[in-house]
Length: 253
Image (cartoon, rainbow, N blue to C red; front, side):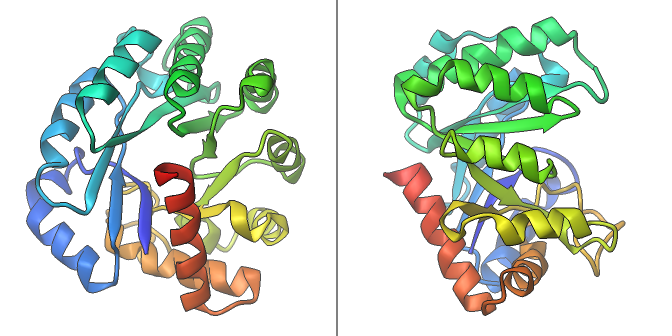
């Protein structure tokens, strides 16, 4: 199993990292990808990825942080070339639900990340909330350059998913698929091709049922894998193999 998206630089995970890693290994996790959200976050991640060979990292600025953290594609490329365990770009994208950063700042930052992904051929990890049309329109502008796209914690509509498939996107299922009110999302993941699905925790956020309401951690991905297996009508071991292979194909090919 691989947790394709978590935030080990957030508490309570950071101060309990040794035990978090131990519990992850106990449930069968082989790799963890910890995601950058700001320059400060990235500085912490560069240290975290040295803690265990199973931990990898990304570089990027979350949409909430774009007004305070101005990044360029050159900065991203430079840091990727200097760090072999930095294997992805993001978390980038657009969040028009909270609007914690100016929408124009978000768009500019998103485009810088896309350009870095094209220059390096590294996967682009995208957060999109209340911004489906603009997200797709921006990504479509780069269609001919074939950026590798991963829609993290995907909660979008089936129509949005269909459009993103035309861009060869991958989709990551979080603990949200275990929630009672997520029937539409479950239907979307039922529809998505087997070779386009990953799993994640987004920990310490979004703990899956039966731990909903608690602080999430990578080991809880087991519950998401179980639920996704039910949605796809296959065994949990098949889901584990499938999502592991999809992750490795996206990040290590």
